[in-house]
Length: 266
Image 1: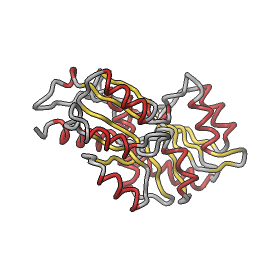
Image 2 (image 1 turned 180 degrees about the vertical axis):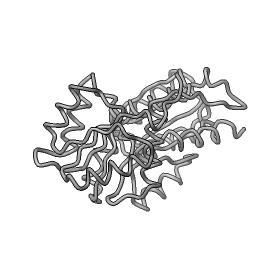
Image 3 (image 1 turned 90 degrees about the vertical axis):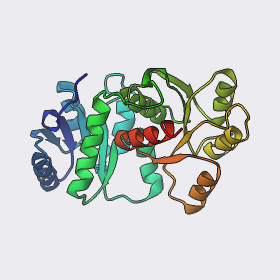
């Protein structure tokens, strides 16, 4: 699959303010993107989606007839749109309000107002998500790498799996929490563990501690994926023997660099 270009992107822009729609459309034009369908409400967005499936949805947080989290849940529950890239633009800063988007595998969350650099990074993450570009490693054949993906959010797990598959990783094992991950590790060998931090029963730090104190698995590189902003929690994560941290949303370009460092370090 060849890499899609920015100018080929078709975007559905949902923004209740006509002025803001014009501003964002103009910013997209500066990135050579002209195929933008702008709407102001959730109902109009759903009608537009029935006409044409875009490559990316860019959405404000609130509309007069609903909110972006309601729309995103509806899209994720529909097989036709469950993997549709979604980018949120919002001035919302409350962690609890944004957490649902981070756990749903959005491409990015842009602040309002956002810079051109913010937009470029989000658009490039979309291209990475839509394209397959196999990694090249010195010490591993990407076709044989076995990765255990651990996340209690099915949507977040599915997003991580999609990113890894686009990098050429074919052998992917899923676990819905740390307890299930330990069971998987006792049943089969893996080369890398990608795990969420916040999970019931056995969290990511506890899973990392189990791996580091296991004779069979202590060597495994661990990539922790977290939306945590709390310094105390981040300290716990790094002390648990984690090799690298990645933020949610899980950005393909960042993941590519981290995996190259983790897997080619020996």
